[in-house]
Image (tube, rainbow, N blue to C red; front, side, top):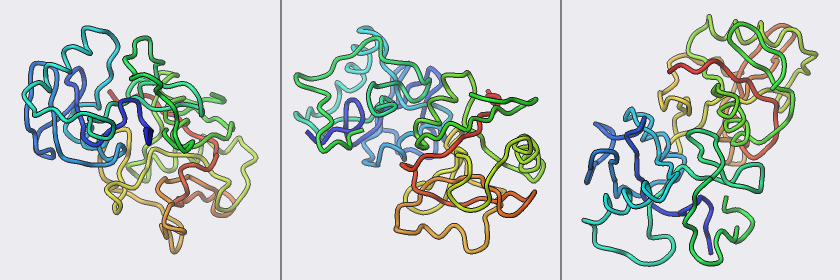
Length: 256
């Protein structure tokens, strides 16, 4: 089955435990804990829309929560079958097991359909620290970097000012970093809705940027994540890069 993310589907459910839905989402139905939208979007856009609404994409950690989500959906005309459901935050981590992307925690409860997950098409899918940042030189895809920061009680870095840009550069100064594209470190910056960039940790648009000349260029039409790299000696800039490629990453103290 063409299933990439857990319940593998087309719509989204935001949960209010720290989770969704005011002005940005066309909210259809809500109960005490959940807001449901039938707006069909990609999984990544669903995650960002929940964040922008002050919520988070739903995680289901018990039979009680499973039943509560089912009840929240009960007022909708049922559509049976794969690819007719709603996005959750469940995603494949490190090419194998699943985690809840909002927390980085593994699944302790699941309700997969028979013979799922099957990963059809094979695409269903810390180090030195200073005051605020933790740097890892372990090269991983962008999605894994996001989860690893979550599992460490931190979040993938967002850079919202020149002061923060300089602080991250200073944190990297102890490392023998190579110059040039594809030698950098993942940030939480990612392309949203196929066009502009947001910080994935907050869903907020970029108000400060430090892209290199002629960047972002979206080479190959698949460079959707932002790396922080050494442009020239003692000078760091940003580049858009294929999220599936491996890079080091920078975690920061959680903002919440």
